[in-house]
Image (cartoon, rainbow, N blue to C red; front, side, top):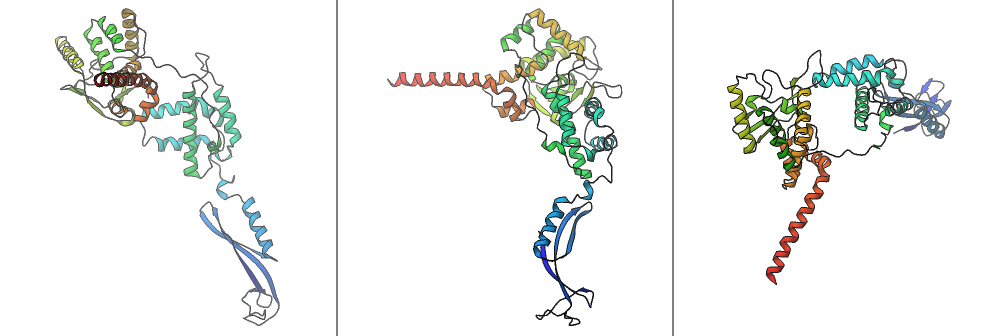
Length: 397
């Protein structure tokens, strides 16, 4: 808010002075007074908000004009080019801060994406000079990028993940260095790809699949997948003591990312949730049989499946294909067991809130991912309602 004031300059006193009603200097009573207008206002600088006054205007209108001109043309010191912010140097600082509250595997993935998709364009650039045009050009190029192995376009989900990492870094620069984030006005392209159909098994398909497996370990492994709804690396990460008295504790996962030459490192589950729930009796009996088999074969180690180290991802996927071919059911990937578990719960009439608690997701995620399955459940509910009403009408008439 600007404040305008009329000033009176005494040529004799050589300073601004108050005047009496006769227009005389109240200090020396001189009439050699020069009238002028000033405007006072506040503005933002590098070290915070400051006050400024513009003086020496013949009329208030001139003062107003000067104020508008100043506000229009003024470039705050924090946005000028006097200080440079090298992209690579700031990125190193960012990862030092980021590593304080994120796991090593997450940092590894983020660094890999920056190295492959962002740094080749911006590594030597001054962040404060990055414009909307620069980012728009980068985004257009990114959306036209193809997988070097398959020669197919990158998935929309992966593209938005890359952009999200870049956006978060620019937000960090905005908060720490007061550099504007031009990404705020860059619209993300729409997802033009068709949503993939979720592949899962009905209970009768799983029964057919499991009936062809004689190996007690693999039979227990696939049943644990099917009747817990746990994620792929959560099942791999299970320890023997995670299951007791028909209760399973899903409190860790494994990472497949190679971090400093390591992999299969136990870490927190997705969303850092610990799921404690009862398992079906059929799975409890199968696990009991499996534990007896382990004892008889003198298999040691903490991991429920694998012993001293977890089963490898490659072995699991190979066995799944082999067992699927044997049973002649449609192929689903390991995550398909989770979809099958949720599908079974939906058709049993379990609420989305309870399902979310059982699988460690939010209710919104359940609705978003599995909402289309509820259409069948709704149809079934209407059929049951119709049957009930029909029975009532028959009795009444």
